[in-house]
Image (tube, rainbow, N blue to C red):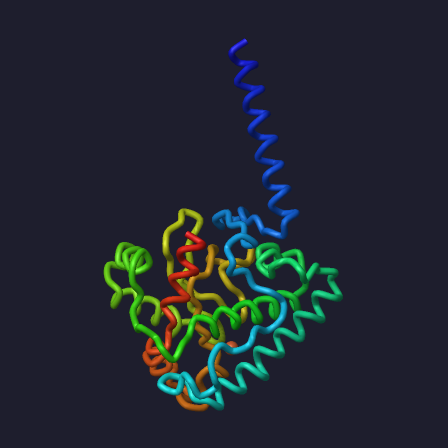
Length: 251
Ligand SMILES: [Fe+2]
């Protein structure tokens, strides 16, 4: 009798959970639970990514202390715009509902074409990258994020070294990441090309908090082959306020 009651109560709570998930998805949220990625209803975070390019939140010359104006202009209007255009083409060809968050596609990217993988990743990564920079950088995080970084990497300086190394050691083109893994721990890693930790095909999996573009198109005009110098200067323009917002909403 007691067993039956327990079973009935399990079925009841299971049915409730299914209804909650269905309602959440119907409301446009994305539920990510595959491959160790923490569950996040992106529709409710306020930081989900759309399929179109958002306006750059500063002028092309605003980040001169790290990135020159011509690089910013070419990067935003040519490279990143190209990913957005090609993503729109791929979404149309593959019947993707572009009113839903792009994260919904990224977490199931293995189901789509290589064109979708390259351009959905390229668009998502750059949208995050632009928003993660500001001419008014505090050059250091604060609050819960700083505490979590110090706990995970011993110190903020040690974190910068490890993150910088992830970017410097990425062979060819790719990204360095700070992300939250399936155990809700902060991790550092890197991905090739335009992959990112949200993708079910990625070696590192989790929720991106901060990403650094280490493709040559991001730095070559000023830094030529000196990627480490670009990374050293990039810290001067990181918008820790935005990064903290992402961490607060995703952790
Ligand atoms: Fe780029």
